Image (tube, rainbow, N blue to C red; front, side, top):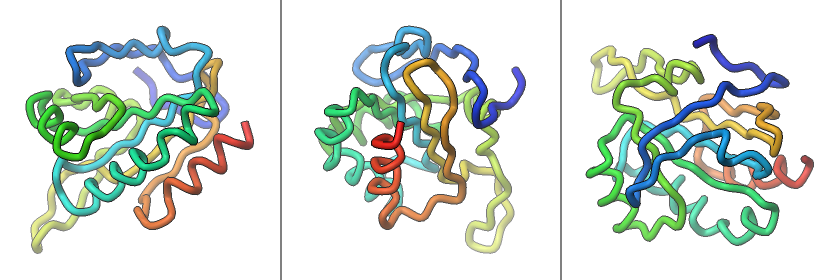
Length: 155
């Protein structure tokens, strides 16, 4: 699969999700999609980001927008994180890194002085026709959800 690009159609994908669901991008046609990649369940920044999307869910839903969180964590880990934080949207498990690779979010990071490969916090806005309209890379959690909501409003 080639990498995605703003202004281009996002290739269809099918991936395991929480609540026993499988998310198929083509099934979401007609909805705006916010796909946010985060490094790890139940870590401080990822928890705050997920809570911020949770707290704004009504505003997104009012604009026909589906929120999907994604990391390399297992479905079991996702289910626990989703329940603990009362997340009203599905989390996608990309253990084989297929979507991480498609969206080019695996980057070298420095963790406690060691170089590791991990997810660079990133968000992608896909319009109702499946076209990638905006991307945010190296996301800072503070104010990010408000920025994404503004971009949704501009669609």
